[in-house]
Length: 263
Figure 1 (cartoon, rainbow, N blue to C red):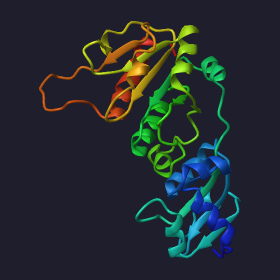
Figure 2 (cartoon, rainbow, N blue to C red):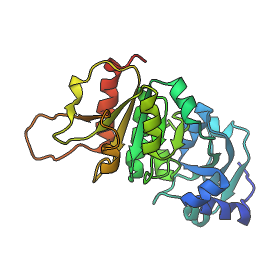
Figure 3 (cartoon, rainbow, N blue to C red):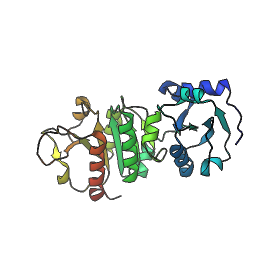
Figure 4 (cartoon, rainbow, N blue to C red):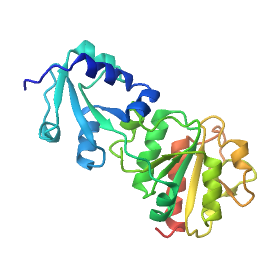
């Protein structure tokens, strides 16, 4: 397939999109890898503007049939815009979707997740994928959480990119509003003050909050409202492991929520 060469202007833009500030400014992000691009096209939620190929890569299937503008660059130039050590040779320029309002998220779902300072892109991508699997209606991304459009987050979400509405906000203020509107607030916490997750009763609608990988949920958020529920996931008690991975903990809580929340 003979494709036009990408311009210097295009290359400059794609390189900029490796940084969060430029993604926000341009309203775009990059999706790297053949399967990642295929799944975004299959989902049809994210608008793709154009596709870039490394010289020697031959598109096939849904990518070749997409009808989108396609360009090629040398291996060296492609490496300059890739986020991986061994790039697969295809990347898509995608538009960041508009954020929904908190009211819209609350009206459309009974289950939401919230992240307080999640910093590992792989963790966040896994959380998004897991939340989609269990039918969560949206993600409230709090201060300190890695950008959901970070290239590694997009790859780690494994095909769920765009399927979970995301709202960046101040968690304390947003959760206070939701609590006043009747939402139950679950704070995942392994401390002694927490109630075992398996003892949770039926809930009408719930927000599950997971905190920073090393430090957990911030104390000021943990203590914000006395009515908010701290939930811990109990292990077998064999020792040797201090805590669960944040994404795994969220997955367990989401699985439990299926039996406590009327979806």
